[in-house]
Amino acid sequence: MADKKILGFIGTGVMGVGMAGHLLAAGNEVHVFNRTKSKAEPLLAKGAVWEDSPVEIAKKCDVIFTIIGFPKDVEATYLGDKGLIANAKKDAILVDMTTSSPKLAQKIWQEGHKKGVKVLDAPVTGGDKGARAGTLTILVGGEEEDYNTVLPYFETMGKNINYMGKAGAGQNTKLVNQTMLAGTMIGMCEGLAFAKAVGLDQKKVFDALATGAAGSASLMNYAPRLFNNDFEPGFYIKHYIKDMKLAAEAANDCELDVPGLDLALELYEELADAGLEEKGTQTLYALYDPGVIDEE
Image (cartoon, rainbow, N blue to C red; front, side):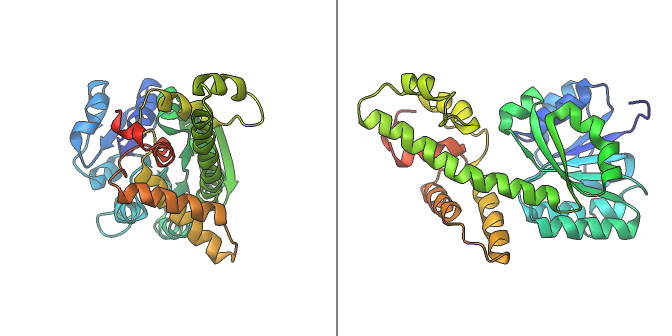
């Protein structure tokens, strides 16, 4: 990257800490902000520069990445007097990597366009493992010229980087992913529970089937965690519920029935109601084999 830019990164949680770490490791100057400063400490120890607010990030950085919790957080971070758009440098590029609303992504792009600020929506998939390994899939919406400018930075964080179209296209593609994942997670958990119920060794079943027609990224990533009674989040239940609601809303706008998505949402909300929303999405298995949570 001949043209060295100052980078900003807002949101150093489960995903962001790994993603920002790869930007640092590539030799970039990275300024960071997170609502809980302690979560940024691993990055500060590696040379990241702490800023006290998104406004300070906006004033100093040329390309700013965000990966934060919910659409309301995205809206608060980008819009308004203390938002990134109002305080960003002219021609800065703002890249939201949160899974958020396609409509909000389009609104933020429009507000940025008015101020001479460039905006991309670039949600990711691959979970905490992909964030740490730098192997994320990144789905990008916005202007292709801006995508090409940011591509070298995307390439430090991911291995499957895709320009999907105009503003909102990245978010819509991520919602397709989350809709597909809904059925996959149900199938994986039901299958493993079925194997146990009929007396099979689940690990042997995994070894036999993982590379066949029943294989999936969900099976490869989450079954080993289940075998170890590991329900900690690579991806939080509360965030997946948010994603499924966004997908259901978008499907409703298209007058498309999505019964599989609706079922998955219902099951995950059952887990949230039981106080498990801070656990990982693999905790769906506990609905089929309730004793596993007690065995942690």
